[in-house]
Figure 1 (tube, helix red, strand yellow):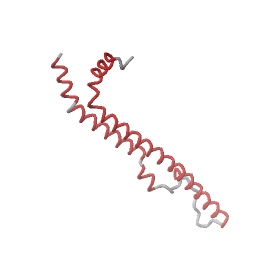
Figure 2: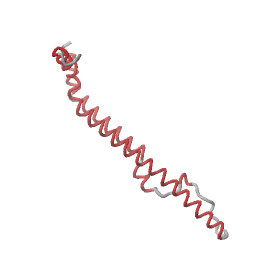
Figure 3: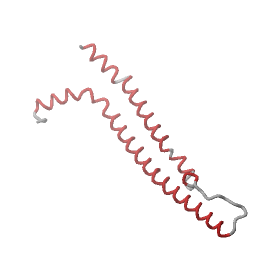
Figure 4: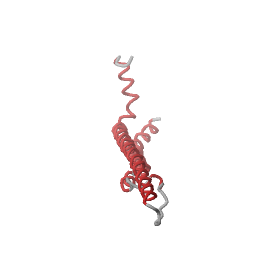
Length: 127
């Protein structure tokens, strides 16, 4: 039993901690890739879902105005949608990074929590 606990603690404070850190970095990388904030910023004013009016070189002035306002509306909708995706992505990345930092700081004391809980219960701090 003692060897099992020693093996667990050796893993926890070496390979386990490193594996945990690498998985968290990978999780943050995947989240950043999912939201693609850089790509959204580069294409911020692109038409939404590439929706735009058919372009005709021989169109009269009324058709050209209709085409212009159609493209303008599509670009406004695209910017509006991208803006909220960027904001939500930044919030998600910041909260995930903060939670990861807290978990990384708590990692060393987690194996000690049962012992700390018993001590606190005996001292009467935990009802």
